[in-house]
Image 1 (tube, rainbow, N blue to C red):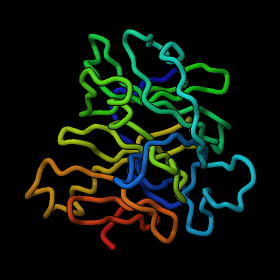
Image 2 (image 1 turned 90 degrees about the horizontal axis):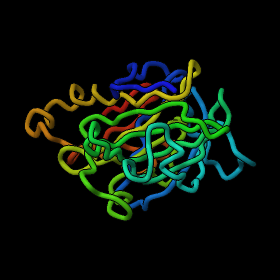
Image 3 (image 1 turned 60 degrees about the vertical axis):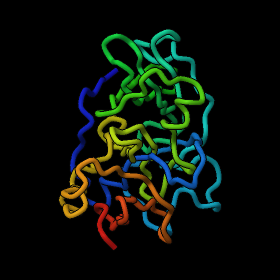
Length: 236
């Protein structure tokens, strides 16, 4: 099991090696679980959520039953609280279960994390989500602030979720890679592309919006909207 202490990932470069960003959620959606695989960015006509697809398709996700806390390495019922889970069909690794949970151990102080469980039930990856804290929230309180979007994937084959941020809640997600399992989606560059907003409101939060006509989630930044252009999120 590999633990990533930092939430940084490589710049979402090409359409083939990169996909859209983080799985948080549109405000109109309700919490859900979903999962599947892929390493290459998809387009509108390749939307993995297409109704024409039969059976689990690489880069797609389905809701999964939340595993017990003990299923995650280093966790038990007294230290960790599971919030949401999806089964994701990974392009290179096959089906994996992706779990959102909060770690209330003395060292973690309620930090939200992502765990990836392999098909044999072992913990393959854990990602701490920086600048998050679920405080002492459990049960329904936790699932209201940490959950996968519905659907959890879009045409990019990334996984999208909502997490509690410093100023309320924020967008995040996972990008499948060929040399392992996942990387956290990199949205740091958004601050440069929308510098006028971030300069006036340093604590600006990000949230996932609706699916556009190409089957990609839009990214809401205060009163602005960024759209996936095949390489990154940019102003329309």
